[in-house]
Image 1 (tube, rainbow, N blue to C red):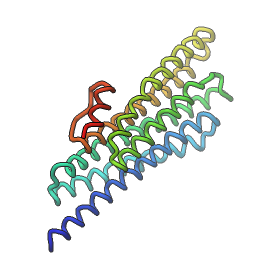
Image 2 (cartoon, helix red, strand yellow; image 1 turned 135 degrees about the vertical axis):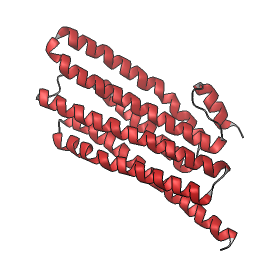
Image 3 (tube, helix red, strand yellow; image 1 turned 90 degrees about the vertical axis):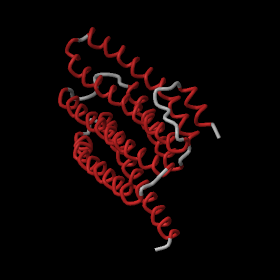
Length: 235
């Protein structure tokens, strides 16, 4: 078998596993959107669908990780190819955790629906946070698909806005609970949902950082946003 043929097969392997990651990403993105929709519409059936799909996300993580290990053992990649496979392993872990957060949101949505007949709390901040988190996740996956370090670096800029929405909602919940103790239980469920959304934003940021690692070969975790953007722009 010629070296060119081997190289072609390896490229196919990398393309296939990258596609698997994007399919998994699309699933968890849809899971988050559905979980929020269940909360907005008080639709238990939608929440149940999200809960039922969690095992599918878990299987995808296991299958992609096994595929990743197989390619490393079979092809013995180096340099950027090895970084890609290492980053994929970490990316799918973050995607699985996003799936976990969607599962938690759906479970809490069911609890809220079971406690009250309609939304007794204004959760506009949660809607805004969810839209931001989903946008961050979508852009992180798009940056991964195109191996675009510059786009990946921009994703972290939205994190402060996500954090601010969370803090604003916590302050609102405190007022609800102080004014009406009967709302304490449902308020705590909303708090867990808001925290889950914040974590989704964190996982999206992690995925973006792995893309920069693939392209630039630099670990950009735990550095400032400014330093991260500078690293992504380096030639």
